[in-house]
Length: 441
Image (cartoon, rainbow, N blue to C red; front, side, top):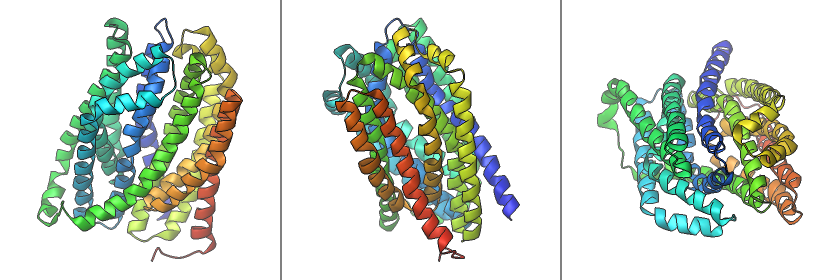
């Protein structure tokens, strides 16, 4: 049994990493292709606009996280009806939120750019990107749900195929719209929107393959269940608070970076993209942890959960270490791919070594995130994020702002990741290793 669990975890990790590799490549394409233009204003503008999208889109990424954990638990309990109920309720919720965002886009843009710091030219470029990307809101949120559901059912290959196709299309459209049609920041946003709707269409086509399982239980499914939505929203509210705090830390980091000048903002945006790529590598193991942990909770196998958690922690650390080595050795060459601006590249080289502590500390935090998401312990994730943000991040980041020090800003991000790892690790150790319960009941 232990070997089967380990094999399943490693297979899921591999497919998740391959799928995840293409996700940050879309952001990489936005920055790298825009970086080929003469001005770094467009890179900085997209970075500023992405602060808003972090709140508008990733603020609702609980739709992916909760769907994965709950679906995996239903699968572990062999409850096909509950699996499809989770899918349909979450899709309805995601579609409704996406349409509401789209209807409110004018007010969101005006308010968002009024509170963000940046030069007028940077804000103008950011506004163009915002207007063309906001139209993807319904598709983006539905994609969160569909991705989470397929992952919860251990169908990482399905997610891999859809993600690779959609993101390769995004990269191709980026090159066409920006370099050939000269649409600049607007082109980067419209390319992302098209790829999101394409991704959603592929998922829905592949969902047809599940029709036989669906027709076996459709007469038992209750989509509009008040109790079901209360349970779903209760978990989602904790994860949403956790996610909003996560976004706020990165948004403050970028906003404080903009106060150091557009060149520093552009350099930090490059380093942030590389950290995102590394995080997606590590998330291959973290998402596999979600799926396997959910399955194990569904069949009440706590001993197996302990073994997989240990394996996942080691895997996440090794992945982060490997990524840092691969990125930092040819760092100068990589930075030049992102920008033609020599001052921006020089700044990226100066601060590039901060990638290592952020990702290495982050690897432990990401694995613990996957563990608690898989067993649907949203309150633990919420409380950890509150403590890490208030104690480990905000004071140091504010010091970096008033001291005009980018090194201190990066120290705050490293400290933040360390805080998340410590707070989550302590709870996991006390609750699941010291007491040595034999089951969840």
